[in-house]
Image 1: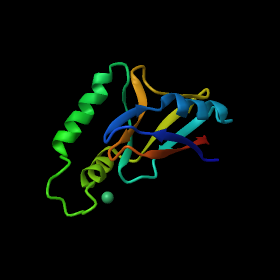
Image 2: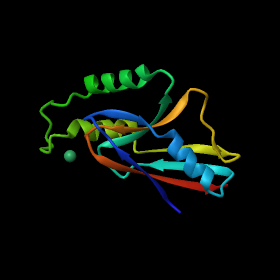
Image 3: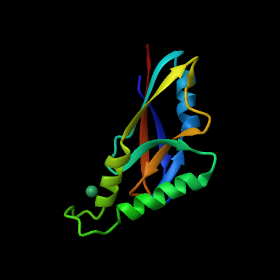
Image 4: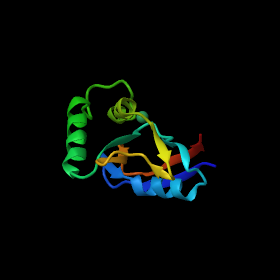
Length: 132
Ligand code: ZN
């Protein structure tokens, strides 16, 4: 069964740590060993795995993404959110994490982040845990 994490973002671009919500879904599933798929059904957001200990890491990632992919750059897409579409494609809309003993096998410094690139909005993240 697919579970969902609902996310409410507050800024135009934002990175939110959703590790505990994803781990809760894994823990509540019957899967002790398998794969956890984390997927966003949106074209202007993404899923990222990186450090959560120093919040400057996320800030630096956003800062550099916003520099490399500027909000305005004579884009052809007339909705005004081309930068968000590009960032979503660069970071990617899904991640797969190995599950063992009912736990996400993340490294000590790793966390699962929802990346907002066209907020603020209400978003959803699909989480599917598969045994194997
Ligand atoms: Zn668009």
